[in-house]
Amino acid sequence: MRHRKPFAPGSARRLPYTAHEPGTLLNVAIYPYVPRPAQFEAVLRQAWRQQCPEVELHFVDYDCYHQDPPAGLDVFVFDTLFLESFALAGFLMPLDEGLLEPAADFMPYALAGCRLGPRLYALPYLGCADVIFHRASDAALASVRTLDQLFDQLGEHPRPTQVQPAEGEGLLIDLTGRTTDACLYLQGWSSLHPGRRPAPLPCHDALDHRTLEKLQLLTRMAGAAHASFDDGGSQRLRWFVQGGGRALVNVTETLCSMPASLVDRLDFQAMPQAAATPLPPLYVDGVAVRPGADGRQRDLALRLAHLMCSSEVMLRSMLPHRPGAQPQYLLPVRRSVLRDLMPLSAPYARMAERFPLDAPQCFRIDGGAREWVDSSASAIRLALLNVCPEFPVHDGMFDDSEPMPADKSRPANLFRRK
Image (cartoon, rainbow, N blue to C red; front, side, top):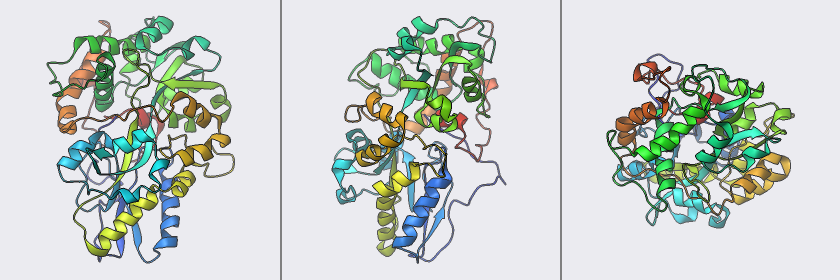
């Protein structure tokens, strides 16, 4: 859920590409919204050195929520909610099905997220699921499947103008992200209209009021001040760890930033939808090759893309990086990786239970995704947050032009996308 603004001039950012002779260097961008991106880089660099020690990997800062893939990139990871837009714009090289080796090891929803029609435009890299965390002892929340059911449990927040939640009271959620809210809207609409997608994407003044009313329940449970709190320092997570709130909405990898003693006492399930659905769609991040290269440079890029998605590289990237550390708790898209992680950590076993990975669909937005977010997301955000007369919300409260922090891996950034 997802969209970012540019870095300010002079910020500590790696160059988007570096000049080189073809066949001597590859510019590669991993997915930056993971708890430990340095681990992904280190594992990939080591694996690549064993295959092609003469070819350097230059890691690039690329954020698909902020911009289209620059021409200097060779291989990059992006959220496939943009796949149709990127493919139609010519930013993605069509890939040979032989790169899916073996294809049966990939989850069907992840493969679907990387295809447009019959053509493969990316290799499945990571999954992502919005979840609701709660204490395992809270049996009443374990059966919640819709926003109405969640509201029956949590109710209207008694102090909507208070940012910090009381112990065991209310919902912790960040609704300041424009693309987060836009994606919530599309998922909410789809759950109310099973089997359909809004076509064309709705203009900012033609949004569905029933969908907005359902999603406003999130703000009513959290309190308007809390839901609109711009939490750049992951304060919500600290409050939850300290006992604040009854439930927290975030992504599975947030567990990596919680104490292991708390992880053992938590449960989670898919974030409730506006209406009952078998399972909400999951996000898919895919590895793509930028068109334009030929000869050896193209062959190297395809080889690197294949290696990035290999079961060995993905498993080592997700495992604890040192003794006593936790896994990254990212959602694998390969059956073999999930199978190897499940015995090591109880939350991975719960992921397999909560998300029968043959069942979900992938979440995608039609062509023109970025343009639609830019034109409609602010209106969706204001509609979701303006539920309390004592705490009116306006666009001036959110500076969407603020530079994106270099540390995208902070817990506050994993769910929220500006």
